[in-house]
Image 1 (cartoon, rainbow, N blue to C red):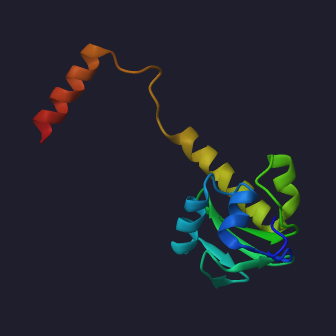
Image 2: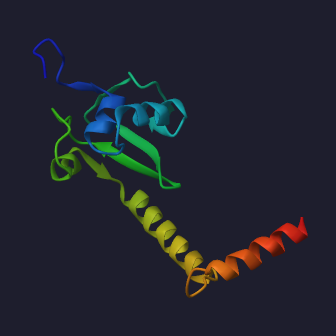
Length: 133
């Protein structure tokens, strides 16, 4: 980090990318602009500064997750370093576990064939679909 840059705050899009919530910085920017990320319960812009102790809420895999900022990483390092920079709230972790269990149960109740249709079955399905339209 350059000496002229402050070390007590960080751009939000850069922080989200560094702590591996998003694969690219542009995806982090798109999520922020899309309203999927809130900082201290406010909708913000990608260049907004993140500070230690800030509360962050973002949409992860269909459910809102809440985190507290614990650190400002100097680089996008391994996941083991990134996880030390934030702490998920207990309520958020419980909500995500419940949601994951609901998704698992929904997938179990969905009928699935034992195997993929072969060429003959696909042709029958296409014919059936064509005749219905």
